Length: 385
Ligand SMILES: *Cc1c(COP(=O)(O)O)cnc(C)c1O
Image (cartoon, rainbow, N blue to C red; front, top):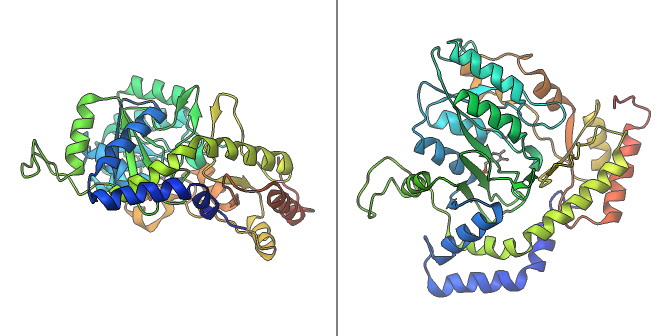
């Protein structure tokens, strides 16, 4: 059994994948070929934003808007410590200070009320952590659609409007998710996603995209993507980067986009079957009527995850831990001066979480095998909820 099965998907799209790749090999425009514009159009239409910028990775999709907004030294960027490192790394890469805010115990996403308090403390001139600079300017928040579930954007938008912040949605895991009728990637001033192969929409290498409705912003994003170019390639009006997506990766994504919505629907069935089989055995992810998760991961909480994972491994079932150490306790962010206990929800998740195989092609019999293995692993061990 695979944790994420990309082979079944590949055989399903084999025909259109081959046609798409052959087209690129025939025209030879490996950089910024016509597939890039076609992909950007299709992705913007899917997500429901005016613009989309295809770029080199999910990390760069976070960095490029921060650069465009001129966020840098002296600025505070709020996010959670319970995410992939790239979210906070993007803030640090532009020279800003990541300010961590704990997550909601039911959703794994940033807690809007804790965000408001953290923003007000920074605005009052307090240091957000002992190692952080004082006098930071509150600039932006990066909520993460963790495991595919969009964050609580109504509550977050209220905070960012009141506090005058920019919102950069980290939808690296969220593409295909929905919150109150709107697609993930479309929230805030800009949204970022990743096409890392294991993400809900993955290519066969690195890739990412930025979404926005802002006509002025998209021009700056395009410029930054190609070394800060002006009206032509050899006019440089700002510092940018090489942030392009390969044409071949765009071709692969176009083939995958044809079946993407269908795959997201299939993931709902897989998640629902897990929830039915594991309710009360481990703490299963909440399913909300107002939103749809993209189910990038199916993660459960239990007091004895190592035992359960060992038992599953013995039966040939792969598992993974996202994330074994919250970012505020990582050496990379040691300069911020955090200590254990600063973000109790995130810390408790790190000790109690593990993820089960999840992909659109997971069969019911395979899922039953996973469910009975989890059940027998935790049998006899008291588990709250
Ligand atoms: C994967 C991921 C990223 C980074 O994407 P890359 O394409 O690997 O650079 C950023 N944020 C989150 C939450 C992710 O899961």
